[in-house]
Image (cartoon, rainbow, N blue to C red; front, top):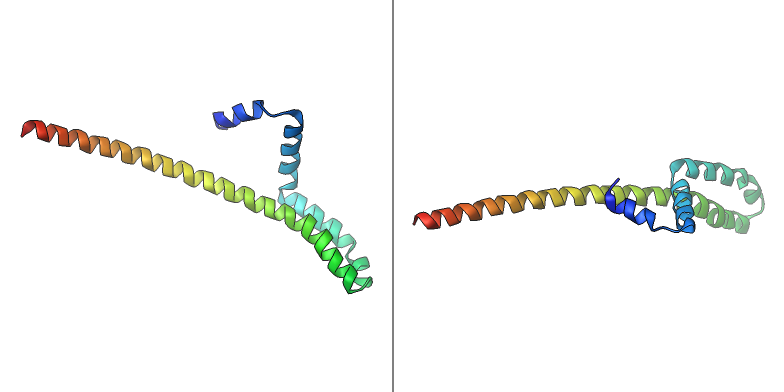
Length: 114
């Protein structure tokens, strides 16, 4: 874990830590599966209630419970990939800086020889 993350976590309040734990739990595919099972239990009743009840079930139960967790998982993965790309870009920039400094040093040496 990066040092900045450790410092940040030490400044978090109790409620902040609880919120992070809940977010981490809800943002898993396991949670999405559990929510899907819970939602599907009420599906037969929603279907027997007519179109309004079915639409209500889809929007209030399925989308809010199941898709929310799946979206959170996707956002977490995108964030991780973004951080990896950022780290790789940083390493590339550090190497480029070293190369530029080396070239500048060689140019200075050539100037001295001239």
